[in-house]
Every structure is written in structure tokens, then in C-alpha cells.
Image 1: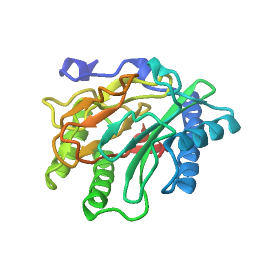
Image 2: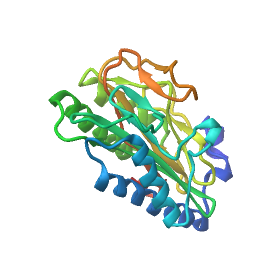
Image 3: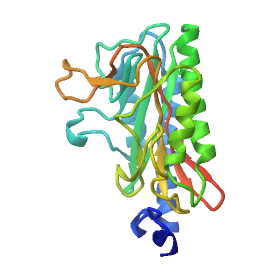
Image 4: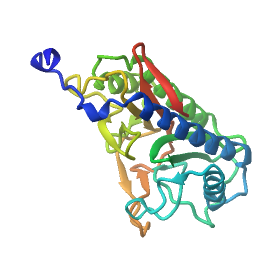
Length: 263
């Protein structure tokens, strides 16, 4: 009540997870991390993104879990596979063949016993250009910097300020149309975790909250558009069609900082 009286945006009780719920999310996170490990072992030039979907779906089934993306608001596959200028929500396809030099984000969310965990990684296919390699590296640094500044009883907007400051050193654009989010009991919960500077502190981060940080960093402009050729209306592309990168972790806020639940 004291913090509310001081004008702070305090999370509702349902956003602070119980120890039992945290353990459930942690178990889902183990499976989710295992999915991305399996992709990392198999991914190579010449494979299709549809093959990546098969790997993810099979791993999930073997571990008693469900892919959260499958049929979510019309999304037709179990994983998002976003190549080069595709910022996010790329749909796996048999004719999307990975080529030497591609960079690809693989984004997967697991449901295990009703609990959700969400993460994504970048994979470089073979040897790529120095420019793409730097973009992937700096985007991971943006995630790490966001995690460092995420502290209990601090505002969520501190994360975006720190991320944008780092990205601007390289003249990169930080996507504004999409954000991180609370997760655990649902696919998407409060708070929104923006990755660019905003006014005010935003919602307080309280021990027991679970959320993602997932900066999408473009080599050029921050602006994006939805691919008109995508019949499902999901694939997001950088406006100037320059490459984009993203890394995402599911994080638990503790008394001292964040604990990674899925990566």
C-alpha cells in the first residue's frame, strides 16, 4: 500500500507466483531449453524450417509437453522460425531451406502440466558476414544487459532504457511493436516488457514474478511490417528488409535479481 500511495504501479497478487507454481514453470523451462538444445544439435544448411518444427514437436511429445504456439490464434505450426529479415513469428515451411550465411531465430514455448516457459535463440548457419555476426552478438548482449538491470522493486522500464542505450551504440533499431511479457500460468501475462526507452518506471518487478526479456534488434530501422504474402498474418519483417536478431529467456525475479528458467 505504501508503494501504491507513492505512485508506483504494483503488480496484482496473481502475477506473483507461489513456490509450487514456480516449480511447475521451472520444470516446463527444462523441457523448453531441451527443445532448443535439440534444434542446435541438428540445425544445418540444406534443412528446411519444417524439419525444425518436426524436431521441436517430437521432443515435446517425448517429454509429455505441448507446443504452445500450435493453433494459437491461428498460428499453424509448433515453433517460430525467423530467417534473416524476418523479425519474428516466421512460419516453418517445407520450401524454406536454410543456406550458408543465414541467421535464424528459433522461438519455442512449452506447456507442461499447465505451466508455460518461453525462450528463443539465434543460430548462425555455417559462416556468415561480419555484419550479421555482430548483430547476433550485440542482440545477445542486449538481453544480458536487460537481465543485469532487472532488480527487485525496480521499474520494468529500466530494462528497455538499458537495452536501447546499448543497441544505439551500433546504430541498430530496437523493435517497438513487440515486447517481452509475463509468463507462467498463461502464454502472455502482465507486465509488458518493452525493449526501448519509455517515460516513467512502469510496473514494479517483485520477487516471484516470472517474465521474458526478448529484444528484437534490427540492423537498420526499428520499424516493421506484417508480410502481405503470409496467409496467416503472422510473419513480421523489418521495414527496410535488413537482418534482425532476437534472444529470449524466461526469468524469475528473486530477492537479488533474475534466475533463468529457460534459455
